[in-house]
Amino acid sequence: MKRNATRTIHIGSVPVGGEAPVMVQSMTNTDTRQVETTLAQIQRLAAAGCEVVRLAVPDQKAVRAFGEIKRESPVPLIADIHFNHRLALAVLDQGADAIRINPGNLGGAQKTRQVVNACREKGISLRLGVNAGSLEEDLRAAYGGPTAPALVASALRWVRQFEDWGFGDFKISLKSSDVPVTVEAYRQLAAQVDYPLHLGVTEAGGLIAGTVKSALGIGMLLAEGIGDTLRVSLTRDPVEEIRVAYEILRALHLRERGVELISCPTCGRCGINLFDLAEEAERRLLNIVAPLKVAIMGCVVNGPGEAREADVGIAGGKKVGVLFKKGQLVRKVPEKDLLTALLQEVESLTGEKVGLPLEK
Image 1 (cartoon, rainbow, N blue to C red):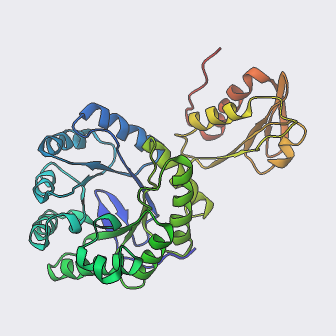
Image 2: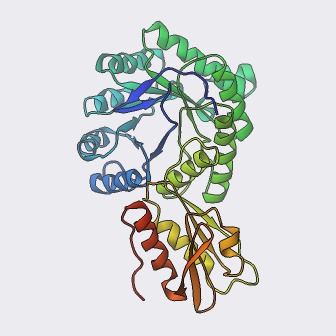
Image 3: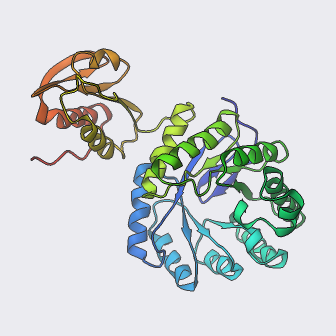
């Protein structure tokens, strides 16, 4: 799948655009001023495969906390700034790897220019965010609302302004909760600029609605070669966003990371609690990095054959199930030991440590 040609920028040591793989990022939902809690969430995100993390910076206390967090963070950090350009200037001195601003709510060109100049002087990249909820009033009136052309017009306005100020180290996002508007806006913008594009559907919703909207919006664009980095927005633990992001990339064969879980929807032949078994396995395998197909099937009659492409799998039955590899039976396993047997086999295949289930 050929991606649109874009220039390369960096967020800390992480490249975005150009020949770099599509980068996965997320945002903490903790109070940034609570240093230990926020750092713990960043560490969980990094373990799940998040490559860059964004933090809200609402006040000067959060600015100071950002500096403490940055010193311990395992991944580059982006400072998310709204309404107060002074916070952006202050957090740059705390070691931010990038700044995210929305010029539509930052207070005008003069204040935006101060942030841009500071980023240029420090060699720090910036994300130019255009959001349907804070679209400039003149564009809202001219286009009849936050339409795709209106979002593109806002982005291009600020792209030209940044270029006039001699700054080109930025990526662009066009955010709307409306999937068709989002997709069309990115399509139009991608045809006119070569800056890296950050993909996402904002305010997408909870796990199911948010996953569907994100998979459609982000997936359609990636399938067309558009997009250099992404964030799946869910009203959930942000670690869930990383899981969904990598599944989107895996489905399009753009990136292969971690376990691809294959499981059946169950039927009347299922004699075990497959739902809980699959959920527990997915949770414990989340931090595996090596690409691996793992099957969890509810029936020993058809399970190994239906999941023949899996590297390793289990199929359940009453009191006893089976462990199999590439569709071939390895051994029978007592029902209560199925998950343990599977996780031990994954450890053996990958060389990575998996959290084994506690004995009941």
